[in-house]
Length: 268
Image 1 (cartoon, rainbow, N blue to C red):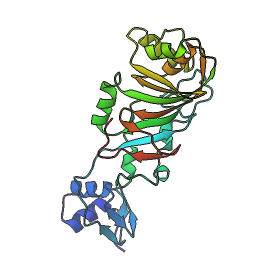
Image 2: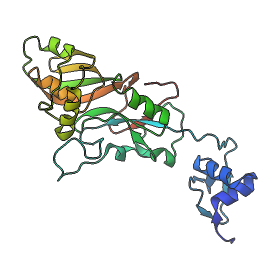
Image 3: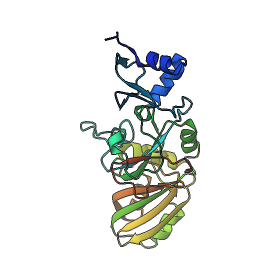
């Protein structure tokens, strides 16, 4: 038996390439050790069978974007949007695992361990809400969602209870100004968001009835707690919310608790 050596060294010898290139090939999921894909360049090998995919390309180290259907009860901000610090909730990023990838993902991207590292969540969602959440490694996507946050349209299905005041739907479509003391659902985050919104013109909003107790809300620049406040202002209480679209990217048939890759042709 030979002495253990780093997999990167062995791959560099087999492929006659630099150690750096060997590390990129391994991290890209192109190397198998005894039939098992190994993504760690520092992995130690002795006499195992090492296979390098003929299609291996060290340049294919693309940053990825993951789309998650967040179920209710998972937070998307460090402190969540609740005042109850005694009962910390799981972060939505914990749902991102290879086993939770949607079986119908048509991106053609091979899942790698590195795809779950260095992710940024750019568009938060209320803890009690469900729906589309975006995690990205791609600085271009992050910049788009951050710089265009005020004009990015959120489409949300809102289940409500209560009695709508006269002309309430018209008032909603006019964009009722938020105020710092009426944030309603959403705790400290909602109050902060409402205070910010109070200092600017209400964003474009379109509201329509989907059914007897469900509203469809299309709102540009939506912030935590804003939809709940708008509903409360016209006599309604939010029972549940589900974000079904961000910009031009829909949630579509993605099941709760599962994720998929952003497809090459998709743009927010």
